[in-house]
Image (cartoon, rainbow, N blue to C red; front, side, top):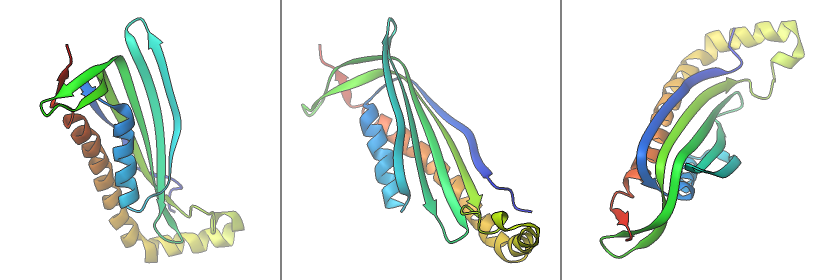
Length: 176
C-alpha cells in the first residue's frame, strides 16, 4: 500500500556561520530555480524579522510544489533562519554597494512525494483501496522510484542554490 506522504529529504540542513548575504536575494534565487524547474505555487508562507540585543533574527518559511501527473506531486518546504545578523553597508572590488547581513544562516529542507494527492482512490472506499494498491504496486511503482531519486537530487540542488548565492557575496567587504 502506498504511503500518503513519502518523505525524501528530511531535515537536510546547511549552516553557514558568520556569512555575508542578502536574505531577500537568497529567496529570489530559490524562486528563480523553482520556476525554471516548473514548480507551481511558490509561496513564502512566513517572513518574520525580530531585532534582539544580539542582532537581527529572521525566520522564513517557503513552500513550493509540482504536480508531476494525475497521481503524484512533489513538495518542498524550506526554512531559512538568521541569527545574530548585523545589517550594514558593503562594497565590492568593482564599486558595487549593497546593504547586506552578516550573521549565521541556516537552511532546513524537507521534500516529499505525495501519491494520490487529490484522494482519487482513497476517498472512494475499500474496493478502490484495493484497486489503488494494485495500481501502485503493479503499474506505478517504477515511475515512483524514478521521481523519488529526482526529488532527492532536487533537494541537493536547492541546497547548492543557497550555498552558491551566499558564496557570491564573498567579494563584498565592509564599507568603513
